[in-house]
Image (cartoon, rainbow, N blue to C red; front, side, top):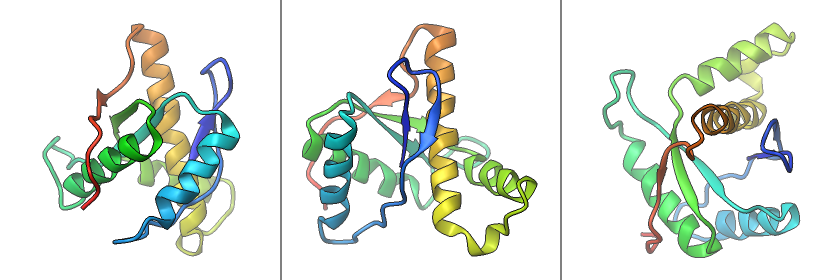
Length: 139
């Protein structure tokens, strides 16, 4: 997870929340963080192939975003996350950290990259980044 400053200028990492397949511990933890940070909107990465098509992870991410929209009662938007993990690994290597042993850190850096991209897109276009997600029931 990542957050932005109050002005929507800068994204910073928060923590890595592990997915809870079939349970709700992940949603519960995210709910606590969202309340602590007084969040007003949630950005979820949309995993797409390099050509822009769906991947095995795309539907899972959409389902999770719908579950977040339902559980948090906040606006949720999905933003293209292509190359965010590659960029995160590169940033860690450039800072002297070994990316292979840093999966939670890579996830936080990737979340920060995704959020920063959304903030920059909104600031330059005047429109919210990505596409809105309707609330749904988590499978």
